[in-house]
Length: 168
Image (cartoon, rainbow, N blue to C red; front, side):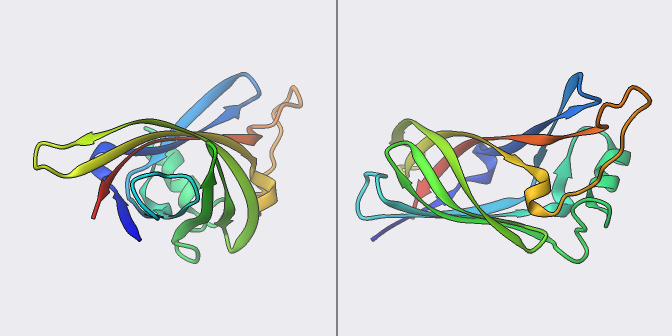
C-alpha cells in the first residue's frame, strides 16, 4: 500500500455560491489535510480522505467569514471540521461528505494533471477536482430573500480543488 499526503502549500480547496442570484462569491479553506492510499503509483481504486478546518474559511471578507463560521452557517465551534471519505475510479471520486454532522453521498470529477519528481527527489502527483452539492442537504439552511425574491445565498455550491500529493 502506498500513502500520499496532500501538500497544503501547493493545493487549494475552494467553492463558489451565487449571491442574490446574480454573481458568484468564491472562497476557500486555508487549513486542510488529506491522505490517498493506492496499491501502487496508479490512482484507480485509490482510497481518499480529507478534512477541512471550518474556521479557516476565507472569502476575502472578514465579516462574511465570521458569519459563515457562526452558528447561522457552519457553526465552527460545535462542528470544527468538514470531512470526506471515498474511492477514486475512472476520474470519478465517490464518497461520503460530512458537514454539520450530516453525511451524504457525493460524486466529484477528477482529472489527473500529471506526476513527477520534486526538487527534493520526492514523488508528486497533481489533480483537479470539481463537483457541486446542495447546501441544504447538509443542514446549511440559512434562507433569506431580498426584496426582488432572490435568495441571498444560492442553494447550489460549486466545489473545486487543485491538489498536489506527495508520496510518503
